[in-house]
Structure formats: C-alpha cells, structure tokens
Image (cartoon, rainbow, N blue to C red; front, side, top):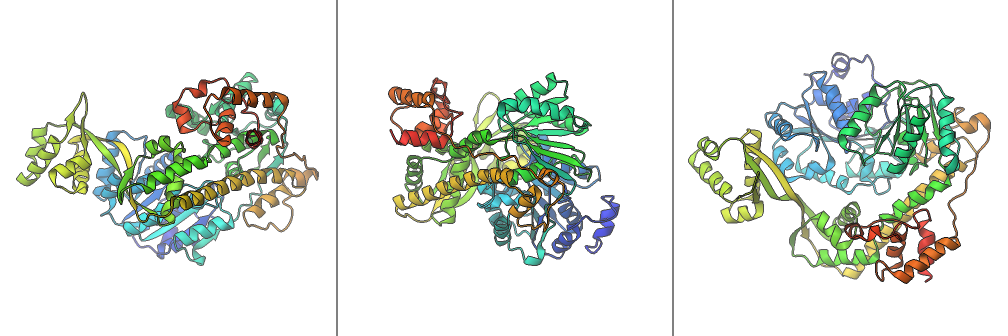
Length: 637
C-alpha cells in the first residue's frame, strides 16, 4: 500500500470523510519520517494519528500507554475493522499472551499496545529486538516531564529503548501539557518545531461553573443539582474511595442511578460498572480519578467535582471527558478549601524523610559495580514508597551515578503442557542436550517447576539470553506454560561520589517536588478565586490566550465569584492534646517530627504498613488536620 493515500485509508478503513483539526498535519509528519508531538484535547482524535499511519508504514507500530481500559477499547475498535492488532497487559490469560507472542514473531501484527514498564522487560525485549518497528507511540507523554503533574520515571527510559530497538520515529501524544512540559517532550524525542501541533484547549460547548460548598452541605446540594438538571450520563469525581461509596449510596437513596468506582474494587467489578456506564443514557458514576482514563463515551453531559481536583491538569483532563459529541455539557466544582487537607496530605506522604534518603544512598553506593535490586524489598528496607523510590533511582541515573541495565525475573516457573520426552524428541541432538540440562536445573513442586535463571546460566555455562529465548519459544509453541517471579532491576554503579553530597542533592529535589506539588494544588484555589473569566484563566495556564472572555462560564454569565480561603489552620486544644498524648506514649518510638506527623495524619509508610502500629488508636487521629500544622507543632516540642 502506498504511503501517499492517507485520505483513502481514512475513508475506506475508518469510515470518515475528513480529518479533524490537526490530524492530517501530524499524520503527514509521521509518514514523512519525522518524530512528532500532538497536544490535542481529550476526545479530539489523537488515536487516529497513529492508527492510520500504522497501516501505511512497513513493520510494527508499538503503542505505549499506561491505561489498560484504553488499550482494550482501542484493540476492540481496530479488530472490528479487521486490523491485525493486539495488546499485552496483566489482564490476559497465559493462552492469550502466548498467542500474542506467536502473532508478533510471525509478523502478523501491525499494532501492539503495551504498558511503559513492559518496554524494558527482559522477556518482552528479547521477543521484539529483531522485529522491524516503524513507529513507537507514547500516550500520556506528559509523564516524561518532572515539570508535569504526573511524572513517571519509567517514561524517561523510553527514548533509550527506542534507540536500542532502532525505531523509525516517535509520536508523542498528550491532552495536558504546559509550555515547559512541551519543551521537555520535544527535547527528549528530538521533535522538530514543524512536527509539534497544538490544537488548543478551548471547548466552547462546556459550561464551567464553580460553586464551592461546605462539606456538610455537599451531598444535599449535589442531589438538588442532579434532580434539577436534564438526565444524562454523569461523572462525579471524588478524592477518596470511601467517599465514592458513601456518595453513590446517598444518590441511590435519592432514586438516582448511581454506582461507585475506585481502585479498591476488583477489576471484574470495575469492568462491569464501566460497561454499564458506556451503555447507559442516564447513569451516574461516583469515582476517584481512576475512572475515565481512556473512556471514549461521547455523550457525557455532566461532570461534578464533589471534591477539589488535584491540579489544573487533572481538572482539564476530567472536564475534557464531557461533551465530546459537541453538544452542550455542564462541568461544576462543588469542592472547597476543606478538601485541601486530604490533597496536601497525599503530597506530604510521598516525601521520604532525610533519614530514609540517607539509608537509600548508603545502600546504593555500597554495592558492587554490577548489582540488582528488588524495588519492593528496597522500599521496605529504606521506608520509601515504591514510586518515589523509582524516581530517586532515576535521579541517580540522570546524575551519572548509576545506570539501569535490563530488568529481569530471578525465577521462572513452568508446567509441561506436553511431556518432557515429547519436547526433547522434536529437536536436534545439540538442542536436546541443552534443553535436557536446562530442565534438570528446575526444582519440581506441587504444580510448577521452578528455576533460577542466573544459577542455571552459571551451571550450564550458557548466556542468560539464550535461556530466556528458549522459554519464550517453548511457551509460544504450546509446549510449556511459563510464569515469572521475583522481578529485579539490574544496575551498574558508575562512580562513588560523596554519600552526604548525593543524599543532600536528593533531599533538595524531593522537597522541591513537594513544594511544587503543593503550589499546583494552590493553583486550583487561585482559579476558583479568579474574579474574571474562568475558561480564560484555565487556558492561560496551558499557554493559550483566548483573547477575550469565553461567554460560557459562570463568571461570564453572572459576573460573580464565590471566593474561598486557603486551608490556614491553627491547631485547636483537642488537636494539641492528641499531640501531647502521642509524645507521652511514643507508640512508634523516638522518630523525627516528620515521621511522627505522618503517623498522626494517617499517612502510612512501607514499614508502618507491615507493622501493626496502624491499628493503634492514635494512628490517623489527626487525619482531618493539615499536615504542615501538625509538623510545625511537633517541631516545636
């Protein structure tokens, strides 16, 4: 197929007569061999920008997305159009995974969807390193930037992986990117100015309303607003899982068709709720931010923020799910300054103590030149949350202190789907001997046989990669059922700098991030308090000048602003008494003020979660109190 007929492919394969704004420009850049960046609002057709070129380019297109729901929806959409596509994610069965690898190695796929963590996975990399990859697509590309609201350290490794895989070009996609985030993405993937397309964030069909409401009155206010509005698919966003449950129950009692949705539910339950909502014409989902990512429902009529959104980026993404069909939709914030305590405490909870950072640095710098770690084990050793730990490791790599080598699984497990003798009989003598010795390295237990790959490679005098490829082959050909355990990240120590200097540098960065994230939350308050067009204020944050008031927000309609105060809070006598009691009893021993404040505010750490101390009655006794106020009080003791 010629690469000069994207419009024909648009009509014949996808059933559209014309491109949306920005799509044709991005598609032409990709087809001409350039890496590109598309910053399009949610629901404006980013996926077509890679789906269409994937059919016109030779080889494979890999789509990297953190959203399993999006992967599933996109794969279903493409399969309905007879496009050879697959996804690899944790929801697949062993048989389904095996079939994907078989199709991949046989060259039967045009698109493959994977999570960002998989791209550097040892087994996956061994399976695709010989595959011709024309295009790598990076969805949610803002995650690569520390300046963004959702920095994910594994995204920084994608450009390295793309070079190793000799990928022809990169297409980065995002719906939320401030100018500094755009600069980061373009620099990381060498995207030329002409290959950056931003169609703007303005959605004239969205009416933005801001009605900060005291927490005690919010349920009744929401009930009245829902009862007084035309019925239509609705999302009510909340911060906490328990709030999702309680609000959904209260709405059902008011005869509203509401269901809760949050990450604490089983995946099967979440899928059923999602399917119900997609088919509904009046369903209400009361959800944490886990809901809506990758959900392509065009007729959502109402978005309510029962609690304050975490950041303006979150707010923009969440209201962007309304009115994708172009019809008028209503987006309203009911949250107030009372919500800041929970939002800010989440941020403070991610900041490790200086003692933990010291322990982390000491551990890393004491290793041999080549070493490996378990993120889970190191998290408990240092008392640093796993995501934060991954970020610290990435900082060390960017500073040239360590280098990530391939992640790997320390142990494979397998079941014979055909007998051992039948397997060996299908190979020549040299391969028979290799496989026979390899199987001899395994320890048979009740159901599975287990084998440590490093030990096996050493005992057999074989390259580890040969063993990995052998297991991949035996699984793909239906001879073995293979599983993996004990994920470890390979590392190389490049230098031995002064540990105190390294620890201080990391401390400065994590506390800088804490301050920056608190500031992002405060920007939501500034938006609510802006005595001007609210739509224009949001757009200015993303570097877009509307030029004049939008005419379709609550301020433009009424000229009024319901101002709220930031969460300034002096501890009352009861809160002071709780602190004094805590200091008298010392249930967690003599810890730093920050550790003590986290305990009182109910912010668990890896070590604390493993202990029974979270059952102590003082744990979370001040969870409704601002962390910074509790910390300040403890520092004065």
